[in-house]
Image 1 (spheres, rainbow, N blue to C red):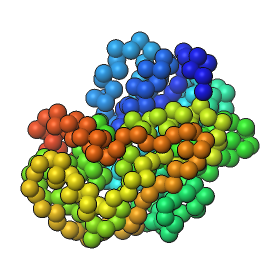
Image 2 (cartoon, rainbow, N blue to C red):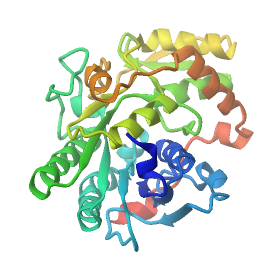
Image 3 (cartoon, one colour):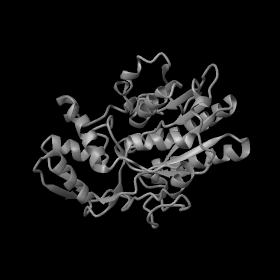
Length: 335
């Protein structure tokens, strides 16, 4: 990877106003790219990219990528990160979740072909479903219920991977696929339903922490800066097959809840509720390929990353802290 070969290049980042997308915009602007951010704001927020408006090399387009995409001029790279990514969202907007992973990916692959651009698509550890192999390697085909409530997200991402590889093999497009494991950091939505912001939000509001199931299910949490570094290295690598990017440091949800209580200095107790349908019981990435091909591994430990993330949540207003629903999806559910 030679930085001087890429300086001044043009990159399109979809999902730019989301949690990961906004961090990617930030990173590529710092690397002297011209960045075009695209988002339909169904789950993203302009607040996440307000601080980027001062960059002359940053443009934002409000657009739904499941509809035709037109970008004038040269385009060198595409990062496809547009998608609802939390169960609360994709259970409320299941069809849009499927469309952005299928139609959206098709549109962006077509754009990459027309512009002769390299494209990296954001897949997920959810392609492994509720895994029967532990830790999960990229060669594992997964254990997914295609018609379960969560299947809209899992199958959208599995189709995304399939069509991406088809474009690579048939049209010789330079494609990359990243399988993202649980990631956290500043600009996460407090009410997005994922375990880390849910626990911190409950602690800050003085509520008991809700654990689903017996709390012995596991997750592995990767700090956002580490993930962005992995994405950056993968984009400029010559590896075209899926790569796990995540932190292998595994923890049970029960132990994680206790870590959050200790971090926040609160005295809430843990309460238990039934486990949602098809919720995976274990998640841990095997990152051997990332280490070998990208020379990447996470560098931010969980204690350090959680402290940064907690301090971010402390800056939220009382209204943001107590907001239960992200937004009304009614206008999106007509199609």
